[in-house]
Length: 219
Image 1 (spheres, helix red, strand yellow):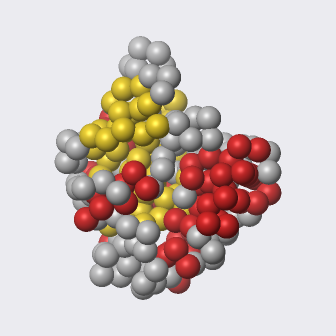
Image 2 (tube, helix red, strand yellow):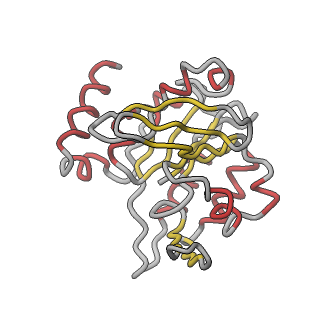
């Protein structure tokens, strides 16, 4: 569960993306981490190629320090080198998670919301270093976790989970959306409910409450 994008043709915009699991690819590792099994979603590399050429692209995962190995297992090296952030979970306890960026070596704390630890874009928007890169007008989080989406609903795109049993064109639809809106001056104002987040979020009462509060507050 990882993702971050910064959008705009002149690369003033940023996109955050998932590293593994159900957004771009499914990555499975054995306990000894000797073997990695990768199932890449259709149009994954096509989407990454487009994004890296038009946006500032980063990854944000709640996974551990094996993120570099996992990314390099399916992301071409020339794309990996152009990523502006790679944020992962350095440590975790009952109250908070320490996040670390492989690119800048910066660290920040993430506290629980919706009863769980996750990705809250406000942490980047209000951070002394990251606020120079990310803001509410230029950043989109792309994720399959409704709790992460509900924390920043006006700056997030929900993507359905990747099902290994059949191919889909979800990432191609996402590409069409990004291409259409690549010159947007304020991504917060875009209609981003491409894959019907409302239907998904009703199954998670905590996420639904957070989502509705955020939307109401920002109207």
